[in-house]
Amino acid sequence: MLTRQSLMATAILCVLTPALAEDSHDVAPARAFELRATAAYPLRQDIGQLMGSNLIGAAVVSASNDSVGKIANLVVNEKGAVEAAVIKVGGFFGFGGRDVAVTYDSLSIVRNPKGDGIDHVTISATKKDLIQAVPFKTLRQQQHAQR
Image (cartoon, rainbow, N blue to C red; front, side, top):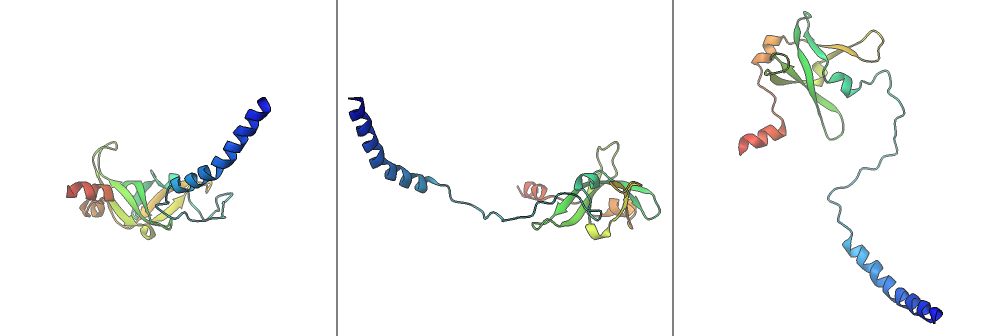
């Protein structure tokens, strides 16, 4: 009797399996974007590369070595290239101040004595120049202002 029930259950399962397989294909979610294929997995940082975490928070000084501010953020394009650095200028103990963006090419990055981090960043603009510049607005800030 047990064999008869097992045989019947197997037959039913064989009949339903193609139907279940067809349903699973119909339910698969459509991809909203195309994933980029990559076979590159870098193993280590090269001497000519910088870590973004070392750059964010780095002190910014003018050409005359006067304190200007700190790197607050980086603007990265869709291909991964850094296009600009956002500098926090002014303020008191991190409060207040303004964010001003400068092109990445305008930065001169000075490494620490060991060469494994960033000591400071030099720009040709002065603190006064950046305080007078138009503040940088993120996309979120722009959209919020339009509401």
